[in-house]
Amino acid sequence: MAAVSHEGERVLRGIPVSNGVCRGKLLVWRKAEAEVPHWELREDEIPAEIERLERALVATRQQLLDVQRRVREVMGAQEAGIFDAHLLVLEDRVLVDEVTRLITEERLNAEYAYHLVAQKYMAALAAVEDEYLRERVADMRDVTARVLSHLMGRAHGVELAHLHEPVILVAHDLTPSDTVQMDKSKVLGFATEVGSQTSHTAILARSLGLPAVVGIPHALRELETGQYALLDGFNGLLILHPSDQTLFEYGQLVRRQLTLEEKLREVVDQPAVTLDGHRVWVLANIEQAEDVEAVRLSGAEGVGLFRTEYLYINRDHPPDEEEQFQAYRKVAVALRPQPVIVRTLDLGGDKFLSHLVAQQEMNPFLGWRAIRLCLQQPEMFGAQLRAILRASAEGNVKLMYPMISGLEELCQANELLEQCKAQLRERGQPFNESIEIGAMIEIPSAALVADALARRVRFFSIGTNDLIQYALAVDRMNERIAHLYEPTHPAILRLIRRTVEAAEAQGLRVSVCGEMAGEPVLVPLLLGLGVHELSAAPPLVPRIKYVIRRIRMAEARALAQWALECESAREILQRSRDLAREAAPLLFEARTVTL
Ligand code: PEP
Ligand code: MG
Image 1 (tube, helix red, strand yellow):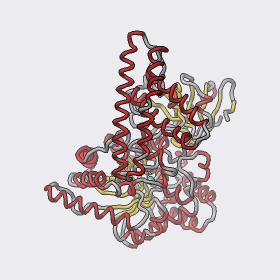
Image 2: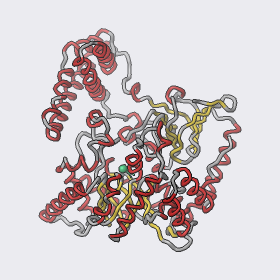
Image 3: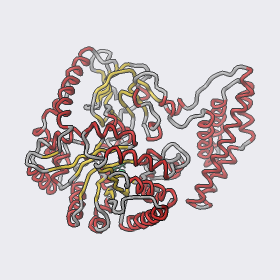
Image 4: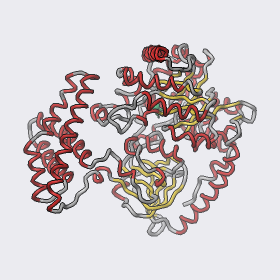
């Protein structure tokens, strides 16, 4: 609920997920409304509008046929049959005639006319007794979304590509396909109704170094575009019409932040070594080849996680081998001899090639995702593997599989990799014959069989974002249960420790590339558990180094040893916080504000 504190000022509370403070105008992005613009046509515009409608129907038909073909190839004829129903809806003459009538007689633009007629149909279908007919509502909704997106001549979320002034973006949620084309230079911060520490909005905000607050109840209802607000990503507040007193308080906080940033700049060129001489490697997570500059500026010692899905989303066809090779090569060359760990495709979950998969799965995070999807799409996966292999000839590239749940998937992936190597040899294209292959440990079963996996890879990278969600059965995107998403839960610490032990037995290195690695409070605990490397969003890298350079490894080990015996996630968090705060008080003082 919104709380009123100072006069005229309203404070909305959410979950702080990315540090920083910004002030500016709000842009309240209501996706559904934004997608159906409404205007009146001039008489002479009507014929062209009908033509536009027809072109959109033809394009939608072609798209449905394409999707149907691909589904048939991958999933079989029965699943592909769903699209026959979609095609029938699309070609329904009564519906199309009604839309045409609204365009000619009511002078409505085609998208609005189609939207109105489709809404009427859906309401009528939803009300009938017949179950078969009721189920057609979903077909109708899908077809309508496709027709509208063709009519508007833009992909999902494209309006975010044309922001006219700097704004604090308020939305229900922001998915990768919403943000991939967003003009990030015009965004001051993010505020969303749903989400948690590891949802896409949070990860994106941290990688851009922007403040973000998620899980603000009813933000879309409470807020309007154009209102002036202050967003506090340290404390999870969105303050509408901030008073002079509030602005003064935040002015102080921003000054403390600037002092801190100066201190942080000093560690950029320094290694992450603890006070008692223990060397740690701090790397960066990236999502696009262009992020390489941010990696350099952050002082990271390479890329610990290159999320490659962003090359694939918001397009109907995957990028080919050459396009991917160029992207991976760019990063490898720019950073060599530093390592670049390219993670193979992790589509599914909240990242999709089209909306097809999302709509058909009950539990996308437990579904057709990442390595599972790739192993069933050997042609697409092969192209990516070859692209990564080729990039390994030009820099220190390593390859990592996501969402490995057991030995079989790892072996299958490696088999395909060997075939790809053979193909490259045949083509005479160079690659690093001893490229290091790693597995992400982000499913509890992988942590439990880490000893077997360790015999077949060269490194592990623990994906705590997923490991926590799967081990604790807490949806990483759901703000309602965000309080249950506890990185310091004893079960998580034991899974991490077990992974480290399995790795150490084979002389492997272990990194953490989930969001846990970027939280200074948790860094000593992870090191104490035996983790060798940390990888986080570039803006977080200096903070991690700063903490590492102020702690003793002996203290970190003692903390971890105690934590492995402790039964309470909260107590572990509290002790971790005490240690980090004592070692690096500046990091904590700079974020408090007394409202
Ligand atoms: C993780 O799960 O911790 C991880 C790094 O992968 P992603 O956030 O891309 O799922
Ligand atoms: Mg993951």
